[in-house]
Image (cartoon, rainbow over all chains, first blue to last red):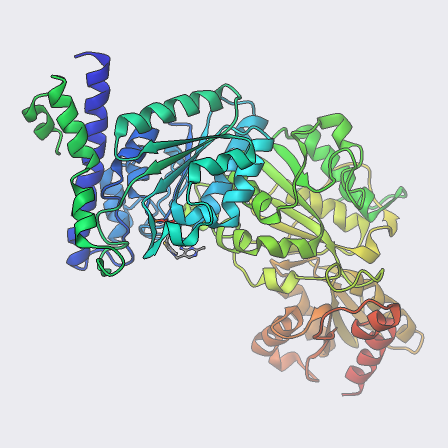
Length: 290
Length: 333
Ligand SMILES: Cc1ncc(C[n+]2csc(CCOP(=O)(O)OP(=O)(O)O)c2C)c(N)n1
């Protein structure tokens, strides 16, 4: 097996792990086993998988309310995640936190969060530590489109720019903040372009194409490790489940639009590409479904 | 932790004492860095970092843009990843732009991470009425932040205490809010040149007495001591307690004193409602009711924005004369 197909399979497996864990949690939520809010990552798996592919254990990730995928991609065991949402002592936060407080600093998982915005600033802090302590580690902030109109985005990107911090800002633009369309809440609905205002590099990628994400992230992380400063990557994507489990959908968006995006499933797309390129057989992929 | 040394006979100012502690700790611990506006080459609006930039450079003495929320949030992330930020707000009023970061992130991080992350961040700034600084530069938010679990709140009243408490803050793994009264910054007292720690949650008995107990904070300790001195001339013996830290609070020392005197007045320059004095009054009522010979009295700053004119300023905060009157009233109860 050559390097490209190996990468493809690793990414495929990572995305399936996230998808299957999320579907398990969604079913558990319906059965009343998940006690609090549960925002799934279904449809966005390519982003966490693509970015975290280039992270080392010592690199740190600061995440959001929709963070199961980030935790799994950074190396958290699904069992620890599920146990946490079940409120068990064996969960990654001992049952103290639930879905929005997933912590495992030993592997650089510095928390999902119930507050939109602070992860951006905390990632800058991670970057500041690495600069101060002269380490080659990087910090990554994942955040939704809802965060980019928050002051944390503006203050954080500006600080990262002026001090050239080793930080990667990953905006997962799934086009809605709960039910509010991004083009309603933004004077400038182009996120990547905003990087320019801070004097840093901004890149827009197809967030449902894991190779695009992985390659852009790889370059940006390398630049950060070399002291070249931060990058903002806007990943255009869509969440194909409701904002949170049990919430109504299809009032603010149509069933057709969701179905359209389901056809662009990042996992199916990669699977198809791997088969077409002769890099995987359908049965290889099935065995990765977990 | 060894007992703190005798003060000796070398005098320095309040700001000089904390600067000495900061300089010492920065030499010894490369993970410490300071952030704030004008704390680099300029040495801080109040001289809190004077001379450190020349020694440690721009990464450890980091001048910031005017984005308090941003650099507190950054400080939080830095503390989570192995460094020890000192955030210098200049005037503490500016901290309120970062309230959410402090309450939801800094204060909760150790809990959220099940103790696997530490939060060694020191937040410091100038508090208090005086100097006609007016209402955006005269705040004192000790009670608000003491309400929050997970933050230590420190209000030294002397250079000696300031130095020992500052050393302790830079060696402890919790977030610390260090509040320095504007009217105390240039005051002088004897301070040892060596490093030493004063632990949190240990009150200082600033004056011993038997007829009434007065608990006071920061600048109010000095006004209370002046009032007590005057009353001593009339044969009244007043005990003055300086808690030094509001969170944690050394309640045992307060209760022990009340057991001796039977009377308690709490003096705090900050607003009364839901405040430090109310908390002590409630706890003494709960745990020391039988020791009381009179109702617990509170003397606070007016529950109003702080005015500008010196005469108006004096009218809204306790001074030695109003404290003296309050003690007299308490003794007559
Ligand atoms: C500061 C703050 N305000 C409001 C909320 C409530 N809230 C939770 S998720 C959400 C929408 C977030 O949208 P976005 O950042 O785009 O992420 P997405 O849910 O689309 O992944 C809101 C408003 C919050 N958690 N934090």
